[in-house]
Length: 192
Image 1 (cartoon, rainbow, N blue to C red):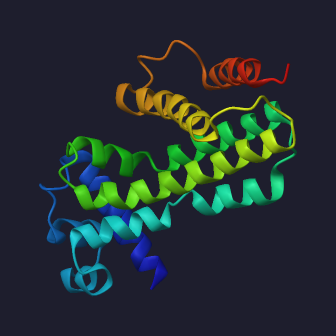
Image 2 (cartoon, rainbow, N blue to C red):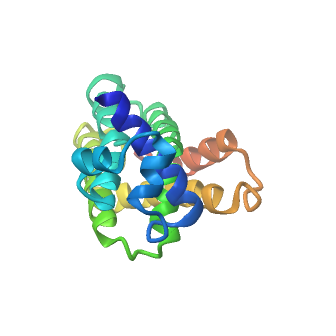
């Protein structure tokens, strides 16, 4: 059953990325996945249900839960580098979902709602991390919510420019971007 779900999700994402959410039918998805339309309906009910299953399948929250619970060293530079690399890796896995959401110009509002829950959870992890670092006196005191937001939006900007422009916009390689972003962030947050 999981193999069937995976085939259907993969077929749907490929088609929707190429033709848009509204243009693709359950029939198209079933044909591309090599299953009956009834199988798609039985497993996912609707196209939106299929996209929500894809959001859950490709959720980066379990990966970040592991990072924040098992890999944090309380060294600002090392931790932020790990978080940045993990974010860009996981967003790369989510690129088809991202492109579908952007391509349909936000008309698939339910998809944005599902994605937003994941972003908010990641922001909570980051905010908690910055608050703990401040409490441990390992970085300057500040607004942890804003720090988390600024950090995440810088990464998002790099990812989205890559996803939307196919790398044509970027003049800096991913590793160089991460290094420079982390250096600037750490300089701004270091304890005096």
